[in-house]
Length: 240
Image 1 (cartoon, one colour):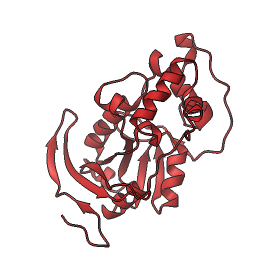
Image 2 (cartoon, one colour):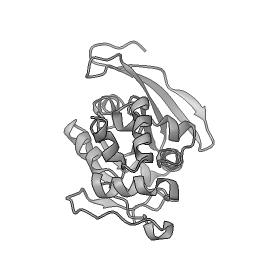
Image 3 (cartoon, one colour):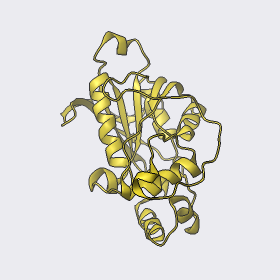
């Protein structure tokens, strides 16, 4: 489909079967606010599976591109398992996964992410490594996500996230987050320090970390004001 000034350029919806279920998939071409070439994003949607789900705001997961985790199965982060869990939950309960390109390394790009990994191998945490490179700890822009959600009619949603910053940014862009649904996956020894840093320095709402199980000291916890997160049952998608 060609875009008009009021619409985004996007493909027709096509059915794509996966190991998690069958999704209605669309590609979206969204101009970058920085003036860079337009980026291609992907939405994967499934219809609500029950009348109860249909009566609620739809579940939505914004997933930032991570080639190392999503494609190569890297254990340095939790991105791959989070993507798989999102696809499973959307297939089972309905909603949309929006896969956002140009978000590699929380927006710093693949090469800079790998440079940051090298610094982390030398002892820096994920925030310190970005700072040592002269880059922000968090550089993601959700304006493309908000434009796509509005184009899809998804202006009031239940957001699958552990990140309160994502909630605030979406709401600033005109998306009503009616509920925040926790989206945690079990930690691994290889990504535990990364997750502890996200919890303690970036205010991610992570409640399943048990650093003592891995013999790793817990970072000092900082208290912050956060949105009200609800913890869902992964098998049902219901909040508990």
